Image (cartoon, rainbow, N blue to C red; front, side, top):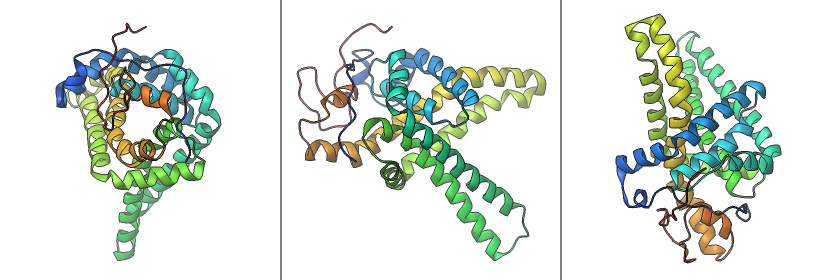
Length: 271
């Protein structure tokens, strides 16, 4: 891992009052303010996933948008495409590896769940289930680390694994919230299968990618900050200024904040 990746665009905030709020109200207002960007880029990410099977290209662009919304920074459509352009080679490989690892772990767990029950099979099933959960956790971090730091693929997965373990309970919260979102979206089907299916599809398209992206980026940042960003800031003062601005870790006056709370944003209209 080396220096922060740089960008020529300066981050700026969404609303002056949002940074001072906490908890659910803060999350809701951040999500509401950035919903259109999340929705729009979520559709594009889904389309990329359909056209180009590996998910990495869309994931890095979407992680950039989700990070900006979660950090109370302005984001633009160009951020999505610029991020993909800068990271496309590693992102493509990352997407292929992520999909292969998850598919193998899920297949292993499914196969073992249908095998004859005995002590050895049960142990392997437990290990496979843990592997599925751990790979999901790793997938939370790989796009975020890739777009923020200059890393090799080996360093990317090493750091993502360490972060998935270091932030285990926060990552578990993300997983539970994702499952809750899916459950709520599918719930209309319990009332009427055919009508509910149409409602669920509409709800999925509109809300699921946006909500899951926001939930992930909002919750992984404190882990990233504690174990990667803050140590880098202390060891390399004065470096990575553009990325620190994007993350809201530099005040408008230029003071570096040693906190994962964003600086008070500047007011500038969104596009």
